[in-house]
Length: 428
Ligand code: HAM
Image (cartoon, protein in one colour):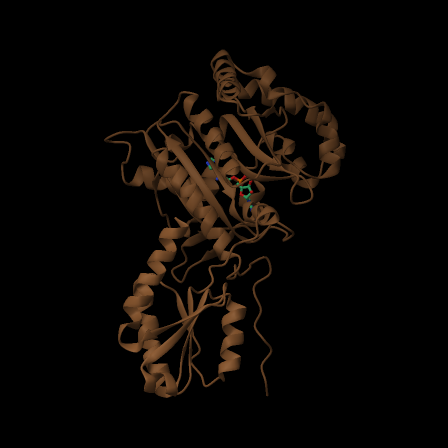
């Protein structure tokens, strides 16, 4: 009896050939930019102790309350598939005492994250982030650099339909006054709040500002703006950020309602939003988290970073520029076992020289092989059968101009290497 096919887990997805070319291109563009600006790659584990995320992202957030993939391992340790990278990078920074020699460090990392959200277009349960973080810089230069990098990356990828939203979330000095004002409003609006916000409003009133439930949004319309409560230091930090962005020609909107979905933020918070995927959504988000390293047991080191939603970015890039798939440079149509063996050796030797030579491993007819070569878009086809082996000459056909030349079997690999290097030179 046949078994039913096993399908993907809901909210998870395969990234298939045809898409991976585009992902690689985005990755290469991002890595080149990061490296040019002095960021170094860090790779962190997929899993961490649950406590790390609970303490960093915040117990009252949707991520920690509802979305983490958490389980007890065989020894009963509470572990979580990482829902984001920042907490792990802080843990690593502290654990390896990276602050000791020079607290200023710039990192990037690219990889999968896991959140059990309701799947929809652009939202997955395993999704990928391109993440960058700067440790040890309290000055607004770091904030501006990161927003500038985001803009540059999007420009290089021809993603133009985006807006940068920036806000300041204050610091432990000024935020309590803002929270107090917000709590007063929330006490009055309690009857229209969702059950999550009712529960969170006293402990963590900022969470209500980030709630997407219509009743809560309505109630938040008259909410005070954090910007009006900033202390002098936060205020001057924010003005420097906006002034420098203007000076660098980076367009942005000051978005007084932007609070972000994670609790660790202080001062500058930002999002890159886009309408390209239908409903308005964030393709990247980030901000300062000056207190996080200290609160996780490290020294008081300020930090700031962002994460780009890789899946969303790839979907947007694909709208303008579908991935280009590299066709084989050469297709070897071989007939009969002796010819196939030879063709196999040739294709291996050519592959080592960076020349992609495809062939057919079964017993297909010449006609079927030529069809396959055409479908694959091979630029040249080499035809080798019994008669070619007997005569010692094989025909190399140029599929574009339909010309053909005969090459002696004994020098085939060298001749092809020469042919392709000339072709490359003439393109270059
Ligand atoms: P975040 O806003 O939670 O921030 O996520 C950053 C980006 O990841 C979002 O703007 C979105 O594009 C993408 N994203 C989030 N959830 C999903 C999902 N379920 N499916 C697809 N894409 C998603 C952070 O994660 C912070 N760690 C960013 C940061 C770094 N802050 C400071 N440093």
